[in-house]
Image 1 (cartoon, rainbow, N blue to C red):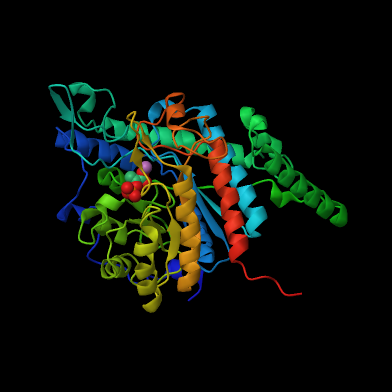
Image 2 (image 1 turned 180 degrees about the vertical axis):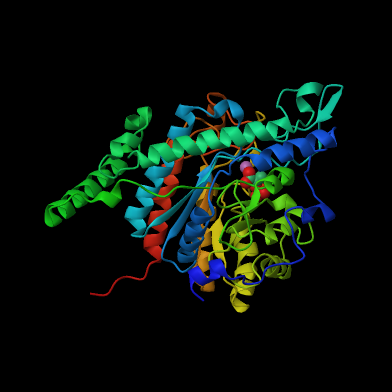
Length: 464
Ligand code: PEP
Ligand code: CO
């Protein structure tokens, strides 16, 4: 069946599903809103607002993810652990875009493949928490669950879940999308001008030389092609950028789930590529129920405790028709466990002949606390989990199709190690994350370079 036919004709339209059918299941990590009428009113307001993305874009991404499954593209998915309302600013958004563009340039150049660029932004406002409450001294309050739900300040008032925050999150997401689209369409991503993506302090970076040399090579190649053809190469001046977030807060996602003229089924139009977090991935849970009915490409986080049979059940539920580009599995095992935990999953999926996109999240299995009380991740562990994953896939006859990273364009010190060998003592200098530690600009670029090096090692030598 062609991609076009698939859009017009149901593969298997679940007739026992609707955008609210998740309400019949156990919904973990959900805030308890004090006023149900106010919540319903906010949902109605959201339903009347324009969506953030379109179904065509979603279908385009699905096709690109299908290509990545077949080894024709590589997925780069990255951004903050959590966006917050205060950081919806020109500098934060454009710096994050710059890092992602630079990384994708490194990957395109080194892998000799197009890259699918997906941001963790324009909606990454809800966070799962390991505890429902937080205690400081004698006071216990509900945990902070992300700006779309409540406030981070440690006060009873700030921590009450407020449904109006969903409207604000929708607006901030729209502003972020609008700015990203305007930058990309206006030529910010133009390969003729990679200097647009320079970050002020990059020139001092230990990696600057390698990166600049690569940019110069690409510049020469572009000029050569243009001289040869006598024309400017126009399709180098824009790129596709897609969005993703953890679709945790189901009342919000439900309100942005729409039917679209001339297309069958329902789309989540709050983002292109939503994922289910590890803590809410139970096959009989509310999140899995919601995800099975939408037509977006979707992903699921897979942690070290997932057994092969459980994973196959999740695959059956979310992609019963084995649709290309539909399902990503974002594995986050940790550098110390991946060699033991990943191979049985690869083997089971390969044996059953299921079509999935394997993605490595080398961040969430490698979080630790320092003696001075910071949540951090060691660069070497992050790199190691990616490198091991490439090797494990090669051994299993499967394919690692992308990476999922927490990163920022800001000059933060949240992960240790990397080219500047940040120490635990350095973390105090610029630790800004309210949740998980992110790779800074240099560490992100270094990861892109490490991926390229590893990929080159694995590729069979070309015979001449
Ligand atoms: C996250 O991606 O920020 C996250 C909470 O991940 P996980 O669900 O894998 O723990
Ligand atoms: Co995180």
